[in-house]
Amino acid sequence: MAEPVIAQTAPFGVDVEAGKEYWWCRCGRSAKQPFCDGSHKTTEFRPVQYKAEQTAKVFFCGCKHSAKQPLCDGTHKQYR
Ligand code: FES
Ligand code: FES
Image 1 (spheres, rainbow, N blue to C red):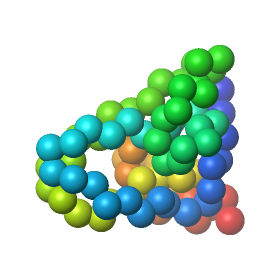
Image 2: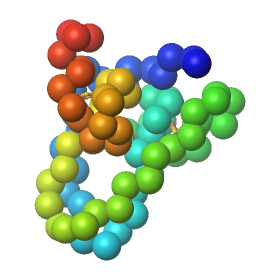
Image 3: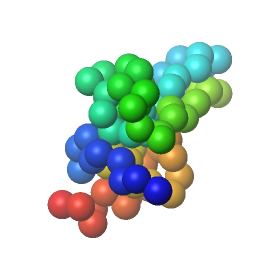
Image 4: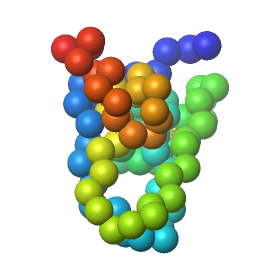
């Protein structure tokens, strides 16, 4: 398995809207972090869907190594 690019060593806080779908960038190459912009095409990675159940601020993983993708689980601390 190829390694994703570490977009940043911290999560991205995003205000999401209930009922909306979001596509989290899994490969780390998107210029529109934390979301997919299609840059994964030359990689084996695909974006991960996130469906917001409520309107709230959520923290999407920026290091791309979370075990709870697409959300941050604190794993980024080991890359600092
Ligand atoms: Fe990274 Fe699409 S650009 S998964
Ligand atoms: Fe990836 Fe926190 S930013 S686990």
